Length: 211
Length: 211
Image 1 (cartoon, each protein chain N blue to C red):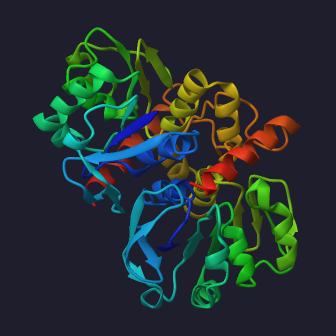
Image 2: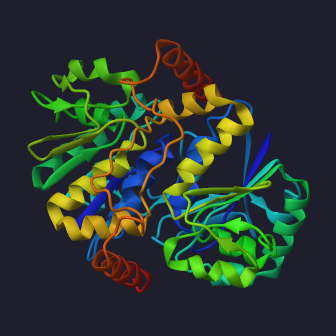
């Protein structure tokens, strides 16, 4: 089972590492960290992470994972990346994204007519790619598996592992990473956040972009 | 506010990136990625991440975060790292760990007489450092903030941010990373996992060590 992650400059670190931590524990999984060029890439919060393989070296995989970014626009306009995603999608069993990674799949034309989600700040942008936004944490539509913002990639990966490799594998990984979440607040989604909190969170995300 | 992460070869990627994703969004936080030597470090699942600063370059911080590893023994025996942690702890407002990072704090002598937790596979090891293991996801004891396994670092960081920077900042970050967890199973901790699942998870973690 080959699992390829698309890495790129300015990606969000937890978008990548959440599902990475889950998928690397799948018995027999071969993980490929793929980018336009191998080597260190700066994430949007600063830490550099390494890609191992060039896009053209990994022309197929069973699962592809596209993490998001606080500003995915450059990758959304990178025709070489988009062509690679279209080519990958021909052979994948599952094509997945986390957060604004969905916008990159959309820019590649892969969300046309599909149900999808993304980070809550970007939901309406899905429509320009022909997708129907749905307010779910993990959206399955055919072989697409699309997660909401940042931390939702952990839930996406565990849910997909259960479907593809069975409940015991997924449960063993969930226990292995002790994923028994206890968030301090019940306001981690638009469903439950107040308008004032939504504005405060937008301001905080905007400020982090300018650092 | 200076926040230092101890990075080291073979650390667990989500132990680091969970709290990193949270703390980097704190307004005004200065993040320091500290290691024995700056440069790329291989995590226990394979991906390489970069430390920016040498231990001696960061002799103090307000918060220090020690991530765990599937095998922390080498770092637990690294006297240079342990001396740095003891030195840091003299000036920190909060000394924190995720997963088996607690064993590294223990090896540095910082858990003597304290309540603590760690990854569920390692709980009893805390006693050899004079700590009392408690089955909580995030344990506060004085200025120590100790998280359970891997994914618990997200809860630890958000809880600590609420205490140190206020609820609005923590809630804004929690919404910013859309942390409204929906784990597929309710068996992500020892409290709720069956004996058979615990054995399956141990076997899976053991197998991943040998890769």
